[in-house]
Image (tube, rainbow, N blue to C red; front, side):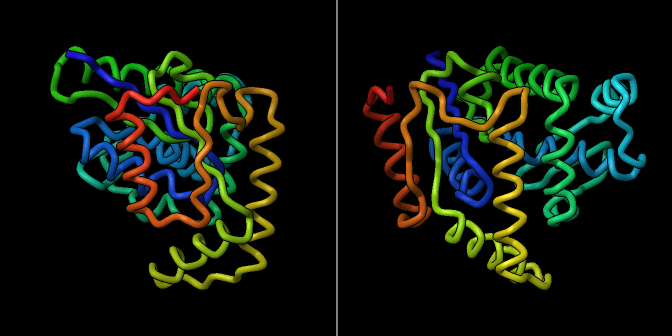
Length: 227
């Protein structure tokens, strides 16, 4: 079986999670939301007072168990699907992801998830979305995509998501926080956010989710060279 690994990277608010989930369903692949994994760690980290020693971070990473069940995220046996989507957790996720020990733990967990599915032959491949999938976690992935869009369009998208969940959402505050996270992610020393050299850049700002999905499916189905 030709087991496909599909990497989707990009900043906050470009539609990575939505598209990756739909693409995985369409292709019969495992969907791995690596952003949710970091958010789970951030949630636990915040509850422990945000310790920054290497030992504490290593212990946190080793003891946090994350499972994806359908569209839900289970962390240490608890459904945290909604709890990890707040702006506070988003900010903490950006901070904790800058630690090399945490990124190393997450890289191992992500690779293990994919390898277990590959060996079980329960899926035809894996779709992973995050910020360093194509550059660090799976640099040899056959298909690599990098989503992007203007900060303003991404902030508007994020605001609508929060409003749909009944949360108060201020566009200017969201835009400021988004730009701050972009800067942090792009300038961190370990695994900075950037497109893989052989990734196909996809501007999702003026495309619907269905249009992006069909574009990716066409590239993958047609074995299009995305370099």
